[in-house]
Image 1 (cartoon, helix red, strand yellow):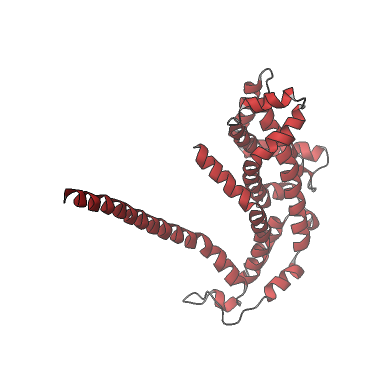
Image 2 (cartoon, rainbow, N blue to C red):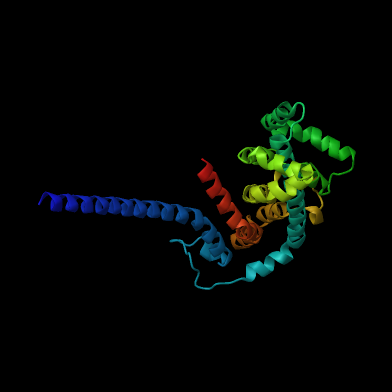
Length: 294
């Protein structure tokens, strides 16, 4: 009799634990779903507004799905301003800076984490301390310097500084590389590999997920940058997409043509979505690896 009671107790415990896990999973799923709704709703509203007429924008209660869906605003934005040249300029700046800057940042992170040279830590601390300097302090000296060498009203002030790397990416990759054992580097040296061969054959494949995560964040920052372009760019054909949309907003918000503005904003959002879709696997791997290491 006692043995039977003990068996029932053993069976009851796993069932209760399983029930608790199920309730926890349901609560977590519900909270994440609510969070997802709050995150996605503004994007859906922006897309919905781009398909509406001016009257539907201000209708009460709000109309999520307009009775007459029109894509005319997407055709209209190409005639209202230099949208195509804005997209091209933004792509030139963002792709050039992120591709070359990511390469130089990875090299710098490898040097600061795995190579041995005099003053390595001091140089890194000095570089990282530059983050504490607010951009408005550097804004005027930079503008004077670039104007003297004739770079104002060109994309060069937006491209050249970023080619030398991003200190946040260097810091993140340096911390990521500290978990890679030095014995791998020493074994590669014994096999006759140069430092550059060690980097692109061993180190870079190991840090690809971390690089992808930082690359998409950097791309988004450059793509959405407004302050830099408005300082250096004057000609309409040289302006980036964010300046073109800002001009749309200044011109057509007065006319309450919000569908046109939202259509331009949706076009500006597409490249970031494409980059995220391409690199989502690496980003998820980076988050998973960080979680395991933590």
